[in-house]
Amino acid sequence: MARTKRQGTFWSEVTPGTRGIWLVRVLGAYVLLQFSWWAYLLASTGGTRERWMVLGEGSVFAALLVLGLVRLEKNFRQERMRLARERNLLLGVTHELKTPLANVQLGVDSLRRLTLTKDDRAAILENMQNGVQDLGHRVEEMLVATRLQRQTDVQASAFDWGSILDDAAARVADSNKSRLRIHQPDVPQEVNGDRALWVLSASNLIENALKYSEGPIEAVAEVQEGEAILEVKDEGNGIPAVDRETAKAPFVRLKEEGSGTGLGLHLVSQTALLHGAQMDMLQLDPKGFAVRLVWPQ
Image (cartoon, rainbow, N blue to C red; front, side, top):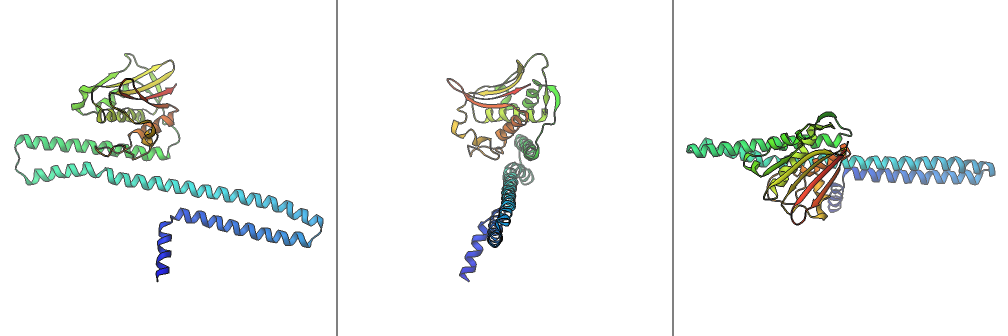
C-alpha cells in the first residue's frame, strides 16, 4: 500500500506535458535501438553492396526520425508553456478581481444594514463608484492581456499621436489630476498603429507614476524626426535595474502593498513589441524615474 501511495504522489507532481515529453523520448530511444539492431543483422548477413545500402538508407531514416522527435518535443514544450500562461492568467484574474468586488460588496452591505448620514452615504457611494471603475479597468487590462497572448500583428489605423494622452488623462482620478502635466504638440501628428493599445499603455504608465511617486508627473507624446515618442516621468525612486525585466512579466508586482493587476508594464512592453518600438526605463539625475518608448515611423 505504501508503494502505491508513493507512486501516486510522484505522478501527481509530474505535469501531463512532462510525462508526454518523457514518453516521446523513451519511444524514440526504443525505435532507434530496434532499428540499429535490425540494421546490424542485415548488414552482417549480406554482402558488401547490401551492407552499404542498409547503412546509407538507414542513416537517412535515422536522421529523419531524430529530426521528427526533436520537433515533436519542441511542440510539447511550446504547448506546456501555453498552458502555463493560460493557467497563470486565470489565477491572476481570480485573485485580482476579488479586491474591487469586495469593496463594492462592503458598500452595499453598509447601505443596507446601517443608518447613515447624508455625508456618510455619499462617501460610501463614491467608494463604490471608484470600486466599479477600478473593476472595469482591471477587466479591460485582462482582456487586452489575453488578446496579446495570441496576437501576432497590429490592428493598425491612423490617429493623432498626441490625443492618446487626452484619453489616458480621462482615466485618472480627479484627486490626482492636479499632479499630472501633459505635453503634446499643438498641431495633430498622425501615426498608424493600434490606438487602443497605446492609450492603455499611456494610462498604465501614468497610473504607475501616480501610485509609486509623489510630486508632479510629466507625460509627453510627440513625433520628432520620424519617431513617435511617449515618455512619462516622475520624481520617485523607480524600479531597480535588476528588476526591470521581471517587472514586464504578467501579474508581477514588485511591491505587495497597493492595488493593481500587475499587468501595467507587461501591456506596455507587449504594445512596444508589436509595434516595433523600443522601451527604456531610465533613472533620472538627480532624482526621478522615466519610462520612454520610441516608435520609428
